[in-house]
Structure formats: C-alpha cells, structure tokens
Image 1 (tube, rainbow, N blue to C red):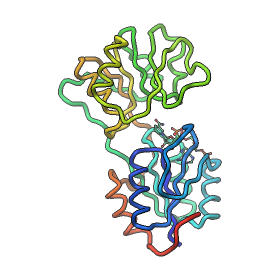
Image 2: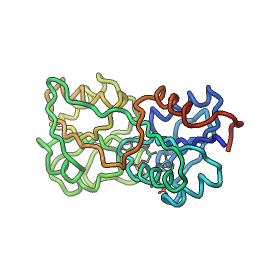
Image 3: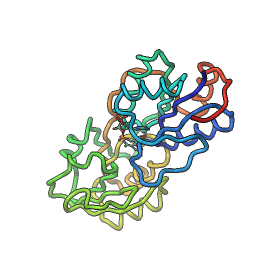
Image 4: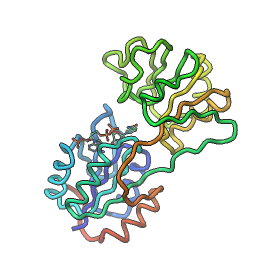
Length: 249
Ligand SMILES: NC(=O)c1ccc[n+]([C@@H]2O[C@H](COP(=O)([O-])OP(=O)(O)OC[C@H]3O[C@@H](n4cnc5c(N)ncnc54)[C@H](OP(=O)(O)O)[C@@H]3O)[C@@H](O)[C@H]2O)c1
C-alpha cells in the first residue's frame, strides 16, 4: 500500500503532481472544486469536498491511502485541519507542502493584520485593491471606499455590492500589476500573505508606487511536518512512503 493523497489547488501542488507522475508514484490529486476549469493534472484527479475530517478518513480507508500531502493554499485552513485530524485518526504520515511567507523588503509599507475583519478596519485612502479572492469578501461589505476585486472566474452575480472587479488568473507580472494599480488610482492594497512568486507582483508594484499594503497573516493550523519546495516533499515521500504499486484510483 503506497498510495498518496495529494490535496492540491496551488502551483506547488501542480509541481509536486508532475514530480510524482514522473517518478511513477501511485497518487491521487484532490481539487476542492472551487474553480470552474481547474488545471489538468498528470495524476488521477478527484474533485469536491470529502465531507469533513470524517469523510476524508473514509475516503482514505476506501482508497487505501498510505500518506497525505497537504499542498493546499496557506489560507485554506479548514482542509488543512481536516487533514491533520484524518492523518491522526488513521495513523498516516502527513506532510504539508507550504511556501514560505513573504517578508517585508526595504521600501515596503505593510500594515500587518490577523484576519479580514482587521483588514477592513485598516484600509488607507479611498480606492482599495482587494486581492483576496472571493471567499472572504463579507468583511468588506458596506464600506465607503471604492473596492477593486480580482477574481479567477467571471462572477454570475456581483460578489460584493458596489465593488468593481477584473477577471484574471495568475501568475501575475509586475508590469501588469503596476498598470492595474495606476489605472485604477489605487491608494491601498489588501493581500493575504500567501508567499510564492505567482501572486507577488502586486506587492512589488505597491512598493514601486509607495502604496501601503494591508497584509493579512496566515491562519493558525496544527503543527505538522512542513516542506517548502516540491523537491523537499519528494525527499520526504522517498523516506516515508514505500514505492511499489501501480498508479490509479
Ligand atoms: N484560500 C485561498 O486563499 C486559496 C488560494 C488559492 C487556492 N486555494 C485552493 O482552493 C481550494 C479551496 O480553498 P479554501 O480556502 O476554500 O479551503 P478551506 O476553507 O480550507 O476548505 C473548505 C472546504 O473545501 C473542501 N476542500 C478544500 N480544499 C480541498 C481539496 N484540495 N480537496 C478536496 N476538498 C477540499 C473541504 O471540504 P470538506 O470539509 O467537505 O472535505 C474543506 O473543508 C484549496 O484546494 C486551496 O488550495 C485557496
């Protein structure tokens, strides 16, 4: 039994999926199903929630999973907590593949906050680029500032009353984000401290324009082993998951 459950939805998960496929490992890539047309993966894919930690336990039992790799986004806290619980219940090895958080650089003006509610209270100026996806917009409802959202999929209904939005999928480039901030006369950027390079352009662009960034810190997740790169994760897998079986669900 050597099947790996890879919880994905990130650039790192895609890179690890490629490495696992290249190595001929038996692994299943799991998507939440939040994005309309997710990237194709070189592994068998399952899509949709498991039904909480208990559902993940059942799925892992039914599919004879030997290890869980949590390569979800650092702000996807619920699935990560569920993975910790499921691994504990089943006695399975668990690794988080989690990019390092961004650190402020010279010239950055960051206002660090613990969550979205605090971010909504910390805005500066009257034109805000809310680069946080669409999951946690409720905290910004009813504000007087002009809000610009960036969404992966075109929304069917306005995601936040009164807000403007652009549709774009990363990775983003510095010159494009510079133009976006200028064109929309943005006075302040709100960002999650996601880490990695794909979403960093807005941070570098804000620095270039001397704009403040309201930086939301990562949510708390139970302690688990962490790898910062797909290469480190492959090393962990070689040590913790015997390689034997055929691929597939
Ligand atoms: N949050 C972000 O900023 C962000 C940014 C980029 C990408 N993503 C990706 O988008 C997905 C959803 O993020 P989120 O913040 O909504 O997560 P979340 O709040 O931690 O998860 C909510 C629920 O969605 C299901 N779920 C989440 N990720 C899943 C996965 N990879 N496979 C199967 N089910 C999953 C689980 O449902 P059940 O309890 O029913 O199992 C989970 O309880 C994640 O895969 C994440 O990597 C998130």
